Image 1 (tube, rainbow, N blue to C red):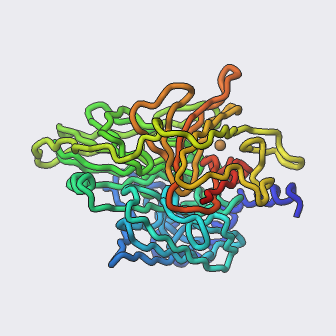
Image 2: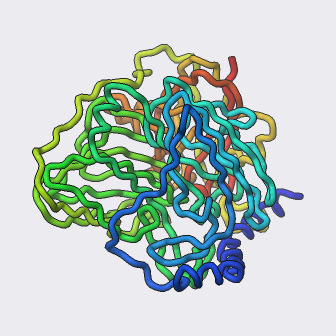
Image 3: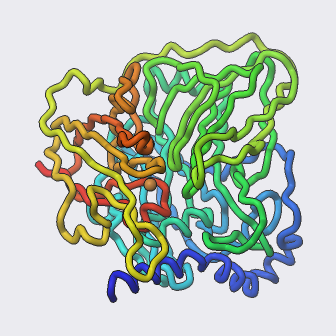
Length: 487
Ligand SMILES: [Cu+2]
């Protein structure tokens, strides 16, 4: 098939969700009828519910994910979409480091290949590991097996499909969920004393009883849901400190979460990587795929609304929306204090650099027959790499990468298998030691490309994997490149 025709097919795939979901309805109507009316107005103001948690036992967690057209609960309504195990978001997988994780991924999607990525996990990229080169066609079952290293960083990660050209629709439909890695360390034991809440943010446009795909002509609003609920209520007692795990699982959009005045918040982890101290914060910009763990406390009873607040321009602009309500009520408790944290992430800035590279993100004119711009890394479309790699990194050596952006939009850079340290953004050095697995590269401004400098040191695993923009529409349209780690 020519590349142009492949691109056309990819674009056709982008509008397949509503059509297929409508098809689902025919199959799912009797199910839906037994569960209540299909569609209707979303319900708000319900207590926050978290996805069901599946925990490892005796060092092992084995689960089957069936991906198919399903009727799920979104905003308290029955809605047709694609989902894992008929749940949006999917179940939370909770493991200890050193555990084995096995996910049997059954593809019952209509006419769509899929696969699975464990975003942020430090595991092997080979074979049945975190291998996103796997193609699992409709009707196929593929089993992924992961060994979580004994020294894995405890924190919040996530899973989602990663089959090139099909990622946007599958993630936007709701196929994603959380992975928590626990560790029995003094730091984690101290954090475990706080009541912990998980909040997964996903965006859905719901019309005619189904989640709409990209390209939908519907005028229904695109809303951000929390664990599949619209504007739920999170309860907290006066003086209580809670640990919130926030996760942006939106396919394409940034999230800017404002801490309302009257509430205190501190970041303790970025993309699962602990900060060396609690960092006070008033608002947080989470790129698509970004996670932040925060501690929050409010000392007096009242209701406060946490909002997604405006940021960005044009296509990337965030519409203001109420995300959830924090209800402080009940018996006051003695004010809980912050944990005593210590640095656990290595500072790569003082270490010798084995290799320096520049990686450029750009947008180019559409391919013939398409109206979608090309999204490129080092001027290459993902389809053009073949067996070549953008970078071949040597195990256990430090690399410095300068990520530049010559386009007018932000591109959140993500690399698989291991997080990186952010050194500077547009020339401004980062304070302290900050690790991420996804960082936004600012756009070109006044003719000067946006620039982020990172350092990374690959350990434990060799193999081939990818870097890409985590705006999944950009990734599906070319903004991805293979890299490898060698001995
Ligand atoms: Cu991008």
